[in-house]
Length: 400
Image (cartoon, rainbow, N blue to C red; front, top):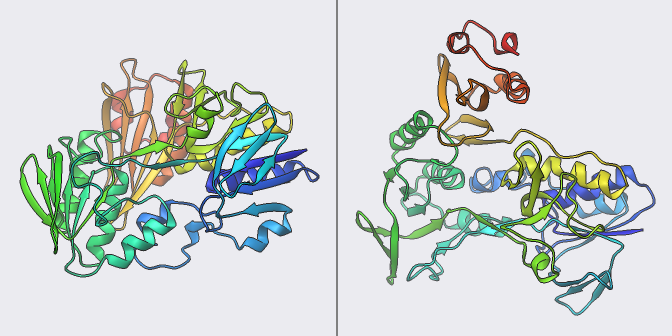
């Protein structure tokens, strides 16, 4: 049995290692388009930009470690097509790679601006190790860095660049920062951190065009022109689902899979950010752009490859570190939730309730210890008493 995994990022690496743990005899080939051995992406906008060569969170192993596990690692190779009938991949070097089972762990790419001037080489994105190194090499005290997008990546880069002495301006089309994933009170808190650090935040400020000059970029926005030496575009990600689409697999902003990561083809799976996973409780497919799905959804895929079902059914979770503060986001963060705050000095937990007073989501600020009881409360669907939920003297574990 030969399993080929396309995509040597975190999801691909996890799938390969988990599969080896479940099956000692299987032939496993892990193909990566980058020249780098597999690594985790969260440090790219923080530790890598700040010059740390091998931060603990990078999870990068030497190529020899894969040989020890009898995982064949093929780097610098781009897969250009899939022949499902022949069970074969076509690579950019002309090689044809056979498989018995296939895992697509191709991840996502940074969304690009579609405005005049966006192709200038001083307009960058941050998605890969090469991106982080290219951006980090240019950051220096006094450099005027503009960031398009006040989401998680945009704000992390703003915080890192400010620490390096850059003059940072953030342009956000929405009326608040991280509007898609935190309540208004948390947006206001983040807004304050950045402004206090010297970041110029411009909200309700779409970027309309870029005029490249010899010395700088002129950014035309809804609030006037801004001069910058460098522009980082951080406006979301697009799943790399083209291979699946070309092969005729169902695709809808990601590869449609069941709870075990299986596509419409019984021998083809998808793992990580490229997968749009069926969630029975929600009655729909959902795609997650988080470290968590790349780390844990491959457990379902590896088991399914070995004939065992272990469906992926985790409560969404991700985090961000900015200015030495940690924010964790749990569960759903949709419009219409009622948000209740529990403050303990500088620590804070904000809990989102639906109309039936059931916990749907939460924001934890330097308060990670609340994550476990909140996961239990979200999973339980239990109706809550608002007064007890607000009372910081009542431990959340008592409410489970």
